[in-house]
Every structure is written in C-alpha cells, then in structure tokens.
Image (cartoon, rainbow, N blue to C red):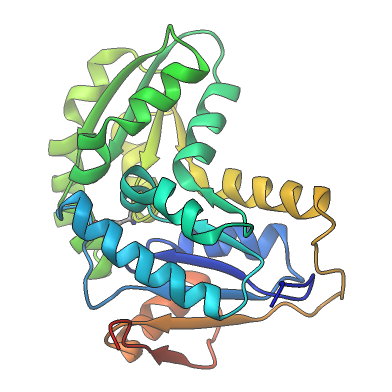
Length: 272
Ligand code: DGL
C-alpha cells in the first residue's frame, strides 16, 4: 500500500524522550496523524551495543511501516548514530528524517562564526563520533567538545528532571563545559530537553541550547509540503501511542509532558 496524505507520521524512541519531538511536530503540523512508539521494555538504548540498538530499531521500523506511515522520524540520537543507514534501506521509498541531521543543521545555521560547539548525548551517540563528523561536514573549522551523560536518561524516565539530584548530576556532567568558551551546546539525546531549565541555569545565558525537536519538525513540514504529502484536512490531527511495556506508567508521564489527555497507550510485543 502506498501511504497517502492522510497517512500518519511515525515517530519513535527508546522511551519518553521522543515525545519532545512529538510536541514540536504537533505544534508545527497540527493536522497530522502521529503514531509514536516508545520501547519502554528495553530503555535505555544508549548503554547498549550498536548491533543491539540496530536490531531493536529495525523491529520498530517494521512495526511503523505496517501502520502505513508516510514518513518516519528517528527521535532517538542513539538510533540515528548507529542505525540510520539500515533504517533508510528498510524503508525504501518512505522518507526517514533523524534528530542528528536536524540538530547539527540547527547548530550550524545559528552559529555566529565562533565555532566551539558542545554536544552531550548517550554513550552510544557520543562514542559513535557521528555528531563530530556531521558538524565538520557542514563546517570544517568547528571544534566539537562532547561528553556522554548516561545517568540523565534513567532520571528522565523516572520523572526526576528538576529536583536536587538532577541538578547535582547535571553540575557534574556540565562543569567542564564552562571553560570552553562554547557558542552553543547540542542536546544530543531527545530525553535531555526535559532538563533544559537546569542546563541553562548551570551554563548561563550566553550559550545557545540547541534542541533538535523544533528543527526536525520544520524539516518534516518542509518535506511534506515539497512532496505534496501534507494532510490539509484542518483540525484533524490525532495521536496514537504504543509502547513495549508498562503502558499506564508511560501514559501518566506522557500526559504530564504533553499537557494533554491521551486516549490509550497500547502495549505491543515486537518480537512475535
Ligand atoms: N532518547 C534517546 C536518544 O536520543 C535514547 C536514550 C536512551 O535510551 O539511552 O539517544
């Protein structure tokens, strides 16, 4: 079946982090249907091997393709850094956009010429060197300072994003960045925008915080318009949510973050 204008946008992540992308897509494209998958049975991805992340990501891709999505957004940097080529191959004609491409473009387009950029992300993302390479491809003079922050994902999944424990952890991870004279810092994990206020408090106002969510939402809108695949039926947007474990817990966290009631979060076993 070839997806139509009315077909949904598929978005996925290991857990709740990708909802930061969902929120921006809902704002930029309010008439679109969105299908989200959060792999709550297997989160976190960022401490796992590239092979394992790739295997999980392709299972989710197959699930979304069966839902007849017209475009897939990889709302997980750990997946984008390890499996984006394989996902694109699997999707054939269905376009695939990812948060690393979106985040690096946003950082470079907002750059005022100073070229020290910080990146924080999971062990998988930072270890892959994908950000460094993508930024240098856009501007070879950019100096990249990166750091993995593996404790932030479990804290976000726990809903601990603004208490003193979160602040202590952020201070430990971010303290070295203060001396680097950075122009911006890329939140290279979709869970990290949940800590945006704390990060801004620690790093101060001179530094721009780059969150790829708005950037990927804009790229999606531009792509759908240019391909004449935008859903033009006004006021029609819907949100369907699937997870691999603990749907009730996810529903409560997602409702708090998105600020809206969700009909139902359905559980799916990807391995059967
Ligand atoms: N939110 C994801 C990312 O952008 C995954 C985090 C994780 O599961 O470790 O990398």
